[in-house]
Length: 249
Image (cartoon, rainbow, N blue to C red; front, side, top):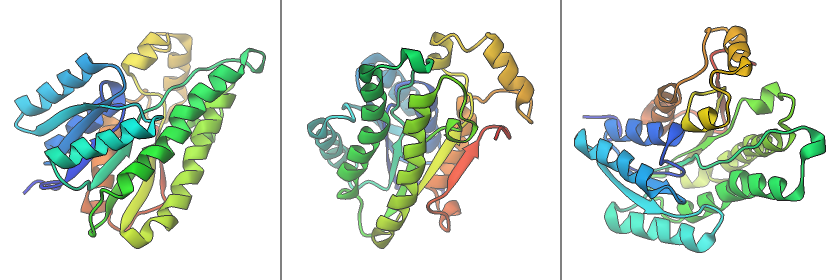
């Protein structure tokens, strides 16, 4: 039997990149997966189509993680389709790099609203839909909270907040048998890093050069760790921050 057979997983921001890879990985391990998206319906539908073509179960549900009404709808529809939640992956996130002189209130609130408030509200909405057996919440942080790159002060602050929230909720939700851990990736090749101009740049070259394993990450590198954290293989882990970066610290 597959290690996530009969489990239900919700992955936020799963229409592309790391979220899409995690959704596919959890489905391949046997979970029924909700592919959440804010606006990229076409991408989410493509992820669902790929999962179902490979024999898995998945549906796409729209919902902005910063809106409690939409979050409630997300979990209500999940319950109708699959039942109680066993796994939540808080992957939805945004980033923008810039020097201190370029920071403004709009960019600050955009990043904190999605990366921090969105994670909290989604977790709040999910908890009531876990059953008495508990389950696993997996936050997607970032290695920036350790390596603190120049020009990332707001983004790094959001991901340092995710680290702290992970520690707090691991304690707070332990009585409900819900484990809470974070995956903190290094640089990963995604649609987002292509659009931002990182891929093919001197920055990518330098990141690969300074990474002990000699390359930047791929989405499947992160998805495999998420599958581990979602499964009973990680039953004795909670409150952990796993830096999945090829050795970058």
